Image (tube, rainbow, N blue to C red):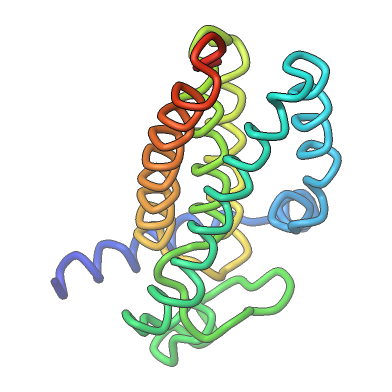
Length: 191
């Protein structure tokens, strides 16, 4: 386990060390949660435009995935594992490039990663036929996740763990969503 942590730390230090004043601003914008509100609003708008009343169920499924992923990461996993964020790690003092604050004490797993991969996976599972947009969603989730390394608040394994949490909840919620839709609306049982 120590060897894995050492590799994780080495990868973090290398990735976090690739910074510049320009990219500091860009990555801060990417990692800042409110930056993406228009993107989320666009997703909701497009869902309602295409699916009308059924979009409410789709949005509810998305909200459930994000809530479960976020709360599992923040309220349960971070305190349970107690892995310090790199910016709080005394052994890395002076070596971490922090863009704007360090956040909470613990970082495993990343809520940003759990939430973005949860959303991307939910939309992929529900709309596989819309492949041209799905690649963008996973690229977006990866970029938001990477920004957490760049700004100095997460190790790579924090991001991978968060992604797995989001993907798992997306699978569970979409499975339940499809069962519910099939039971309640047999003629419109899926998307």
